[in-house]
Length: 80
Image (cartoon, rainbow, N blue to C red; front, side, top):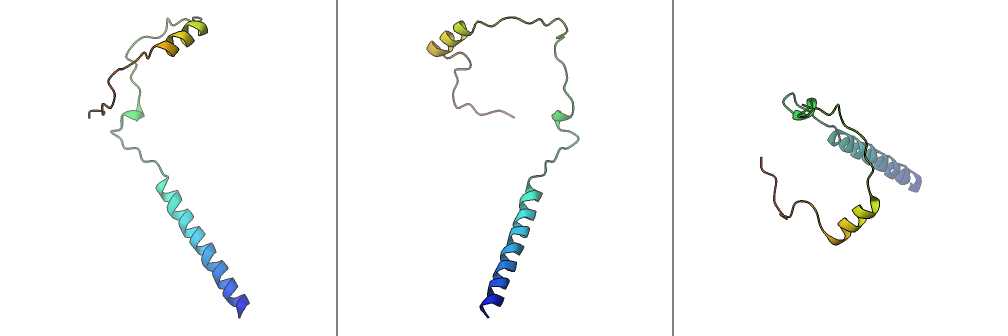
């Protein structure tokens, strides 16, 4: 009798894993709609004349160590 109970437990566990995997896979699908702006990227500026330039790593390290460049308005939510 113990073997039959063990086999039943194994089958139940395997069924639970298969069902859980099915639910996890269905929730991971991405959905894009025709009106989503991700479908196309509009170039706002002409970038054909862009040239490489060297970055001073010493200057960048010092600047970012002693100051905090960027937006200084914390905790502002995005507006839709």
